[in-house]
Length: 150
Image (tube, rainbow, N blue to C red; front, top):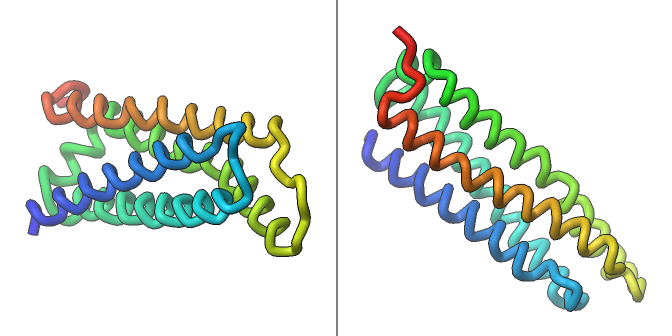
């Protein structure tokens, strides 16, 4: 059970990162209306992956693994959680933009893709990617016992 849960946790993390990279790749100045539908679908997959990461992570802390004491007594764990929450909160802005673009396309509006909106969404996605890159570092530090308090 523990091994399968760890595997699904890591797999969902990779899916989440892959979705963010895809969003970053798609969200460029060359963004075309047909790609908006794609980016909305990728963003939905990103949300699903984030939920799976959260559920499997909570289960690893409270149900299996090294035990709650290992995680809850380690400040590095809280940094890791804070980074995950920050990535999630930052993702709200681009998601809302993608939804606005998609809604506008469905109503037949033209010229919905302004360069400033695209650049803003791309900056938020880039920030998410940067913060996401530090989460595995926190996991490695935790696995090495860094931060464990007696």
